[in-house]
Image (cartoon, rainbow, N blue to C red; front, side):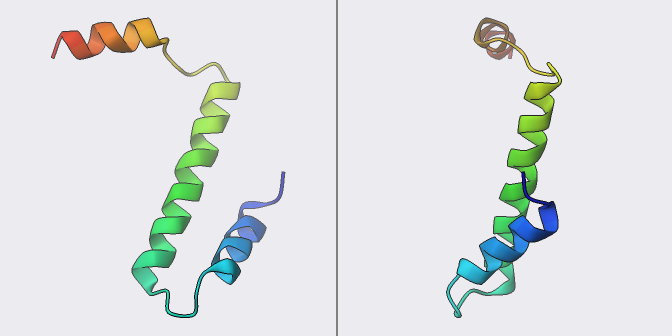
Amino acid sequence: MESLKQEALNVISKMPETADIDDIMYRLYVIDKVRKGREAAQNGQFISIEELEKEIQTW
């Protein structure tokens, strides 16, 4: 897996020249959330679909 810095640089370099700071920040935000989600899943920090459905029904 490439480093976070390298992944960010790759993503930014592929963006159009017209990209503004909000576009860049959003892409970096998404990268961060996906990485954290993968790490959580690898560490067993997730709930099943059934548990999620029960949680939603109690709202």
